[in-house]
Amino acid sequence: MDRAFARLYNFDFSGAHKVLDQQQSADPAYPLTYSVRAAAHLFTELDRLKILEADFFLDDESVTTKKKLKPDPEARAAMHRAIEEGRSRAQARLAKTPGDVDALFTRCMGLSVITDYTVLVERRHWRGFTLARETHEYAKKLLALNPPFYDAYLTMGSAEYVIGSMPFFLRWFARFDTIQGNKQRAGELLTLVSERGRYYAPFAKILLAVIHLREKQPARARAELAAFLRQFPDNPLVRKELDRIDQRLQARPDGRVLR
Image (tube, rainbow, N blue to C red; front, side, top):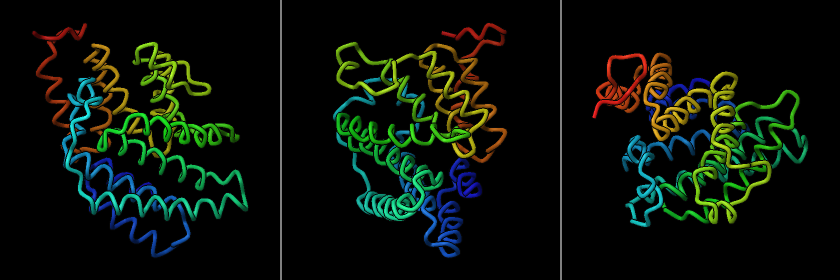
């Protein structure tokens, strides 16, 4: 799984599938393989549709617009098939061991993949909130373990920031248990993942960079992206975003932006 995630973070999606093929052949009952495969299909689509560009996440209208995209039906089918295969295998393990970490994370990750696809590709935002609540429940189970599974804080931190960025009346409709809509707490939780998470630590750095850019803190965003790129130097998108930030920043310690 570590090798597969490394390929994903380097945007080597075909390489990730090859690693997952090996894992699936060796242990077809292992559930997490299938959620990671679903993530590979998702990120392939997000990259193809150019949804992963930082400017997309900085412009709220880009995220909330109902303008239809043209998703690849084969990629969508493959993603859903992998999620269902992971779900069935995870449920079989949870029936025997309710605290099975890999099974719980499989469900949490699979639901996160569906949520992201539903919101970012299909633009079905309220359906996305329904799925996000279900994801949230699995994240709480992972965090209730001793020790907690730190990657699950990414779900919590993301929800804190998204809810905190909403107008009040929308925030009321999108309520989550244990989520206050606190942007500062969002940053704290994502920082915890970046420091102690196993699989999502690099992803947390990307989300922190996006948050820093949205909060007009490009120097802090640059630090997160630079740390990510030291670990995954073959990622072309992060390198591109880092170059864009460098072009905007003045060569001074306060990180003020050139106009």
